Image 1: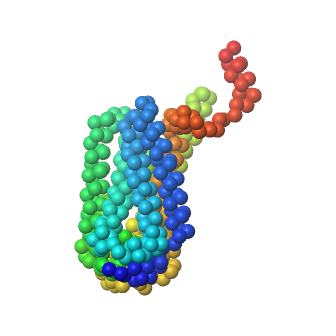
Image 2 (image 1 turned 60 degrees about the horizontal axis):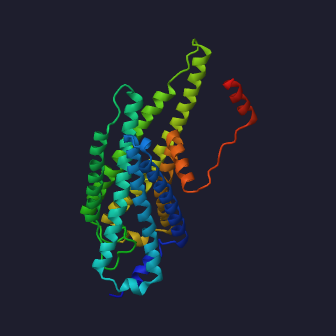
Image 3 (image 1 turned 135 degrees about the vertical axis):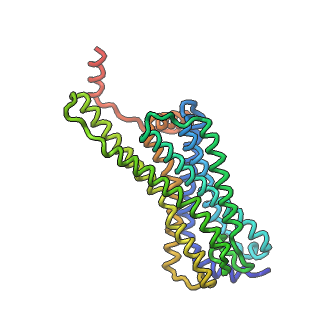
Length: 345
């Protein structure tokens, strides 16, 4: 079946080598950060609290997403470089490859978003209702199967709803084939709602409520100087937490543009099956920029938790030292040494 010319004609309309280099480089960076995070949590006993287990699950989901994006942007490069090899593959084989890519990608995104939602709920309970008991290991053991069951189910739904034609498998998204069906549109909507939009609503509601509560705390002016000093320290700490919450929300929202664009393409194909052939170059530039946004959570999530958790940061430095990596040490100024010696006297 020699149809590589037709494929490559459409393939080159969206494939960009420079974009592939950027995406693969960012994916490798995200992979390294999340592997470091997982190793730190799994090798340090004092970091095995329920919340850190959720963070480790988030890191695993982000690793899946990074690996998928790396392969996803390597695959078209192979197609362009080896058209003869690609043209000799059967349609069944190509469809299987595309479905594996699709399943793995949406599995990582779904698990990541659902885990972020669970972390948001846990933080909400801990800050809004501090007297309630925190999540136990038994709760976490129930959350993990639920998260991955929902993720696998939505991934299968999206894969089943994809339609490919013999000459238009293209970039393995299925969104740019000429076949648009109501089934595909419905399944795509179910996936986007369950795996993207509902978790984002939960994340925003939890973190906005937390931010409002923290910002409303006032410093009591009729207390002692010590209490006022401690209250100011707490106020600065709360401001830092609010900043981290905002960054987490923005990280989660980075999935929205691509999801909305994907839904628009899916429904537009019902009216115009040849939509992908009429879209201007500006559309593909926008599409490519949205793909880069998908990688940001994989990089931001481990950085945010490294900043937010002092204990985790110390354990990570210890781990990096143990493998021989240089760590920048904070310089101790003479005044600090003098103060310490005075206090010991």
